[in-house]
Image (cartoon, rainbow, N blue to C red; front, top):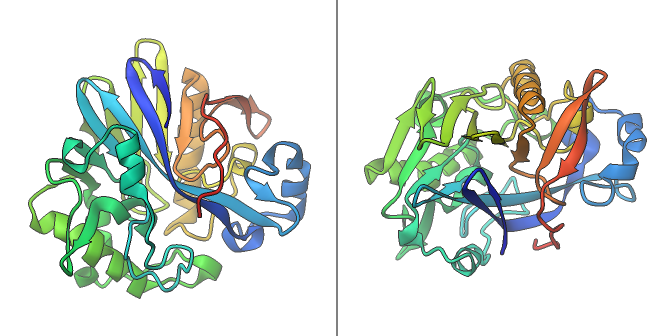
Length: 310
C-alpha cells in the first residue's frame, strides 16, 4: 500500500478500479480537441488515452489516520450493486476489503467514513450484501453525509435529476444507490448528517462545495504550515486545472460546480495544499499554482502511478 504523511496525518491510497471511462466529449461536453491536444504532454497516458480519446479515471478511497482514528474518504463502487447504466461497475466482485486489509484496516477498525457526496461511486462500500440484505460495512463508524444530498437523492423527495452521461439523468440508478448504500446506514443509526461545516478533529474539517451535487463537500487538512484538500468530484481530470471552467456532464448544477472549483483551487494555490480529487489515476494528487486563467501542476504527490485494476 502507498502511504504519505501530511501534517501528522498518514494518507494511504486504496484504488478499487482504474480504466478508460468514456470519450472526452461524453464526460466533458464543453471541452474541445485542442484542450486535450495542447496538454497531451502531461495528460497522456495517465489521464487521457489519445488513441481512443477516452478519459482515464480511478475509483479510490483515501485512508486517513489522524489523532488515533481511522477515517475513510469516500467508499467507491462496492460489490454486488445493481448499476445497469454503469457497466464498468455493475454487480462487481472486486477485492476492496482485501486491499483494505493489506493497508492494516479491518472493517471494524474504521472510526469515521466521509462521503464527500452521495453518488454511487462514492458510497458503494458503505454497505455490503450479507444473507441477501444490505448492512453497513463499517459497524463501528460514524458516516458523515451532507444533509443536502440525503434530502436531494432520497427517492421519496421525487427530485428531478439533471446530471448524467450525455445529459441523460438516471433516476433509477440514483434510487438504487440510495436504497442499497445510504438508507441501510440511516436505518442503523450510524449516519451523521451535517450542513454548513463539520469538524472531524483538530486537523480535519468538512466544508460545503456545492454544484456537482447540492451537498458536494471538501475535506480540509490543516496542520501548521501543511495543507491538503480532498475535493471529491470538483475535479475529474487534471485538464480542469488548466481549464477550470470546464465541467462534466455529471454535475447537477454545472455553473455552481465551476464556481466551487475555482474557489477551492484558488485556496489550494494560496496555501500550497496538495489537492486530492476522487478520480485521478497517475500520482493521485497535485499541488497547483495560478497560471493565466487556470492553474498548473507544481508537483505531484508521492504516490506511485497505479496499474489498471478494472
